[in-house]
Image 1 (cartoon, rainbow, N blue to C red):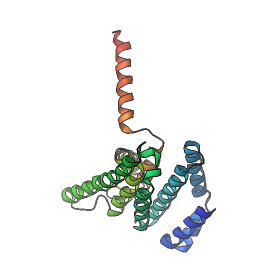
Image 2: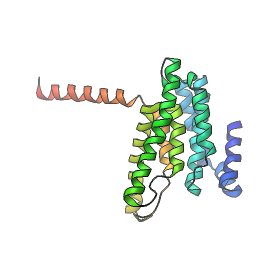
Image 3: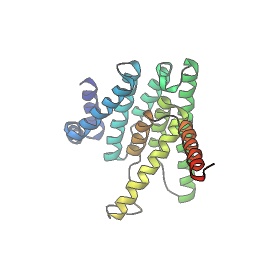
Image 4: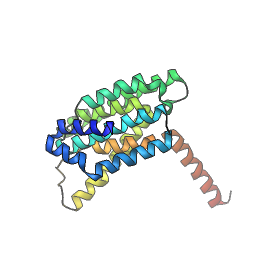
Length: 223
């Protein structure tokens, strides 16, 4: 209830009172929030990590809604995510076992998250002579990196790019948008970031993939 009320106030402020109030009251936003929290509770139970990532999820939901309607990511969200992510990094078990390394992973996550998207933005401006990635997205991934670390923040960006490509292609085929139209990338980054919370490190996934490939080829070739 407390977090829900805070989201309603924030959305009403940034998106506009009528739109924010409408979004806050819709069943969809409540369903997404409740489902997300249920998944977090299943993963972390009643622990510090649950409350830490509850803040993470609420931030992502707020950012997604604001970016979807206004094509802007208010700086306050990424800044708070960076601050809380770093300060409470020593309590964030998803960043590792060692408390000191958790802090380092959080810092490197900020640098890698913001740096990778800033590089894409710079190259896009250089090649296409127009904004490809907004600075709001860059700031968002700095905040995300503070929570999930450098490996997973890159994984989140990859997932977001794949999802955005699929949705964008589908909208073009359906003639809802043209190739020149812009779609908000923030919601896709938020979805990708949320999914990585429940996925293992990319390096572990790659090891499992190559192990499966080796076993499959061994059985296929009868070696």
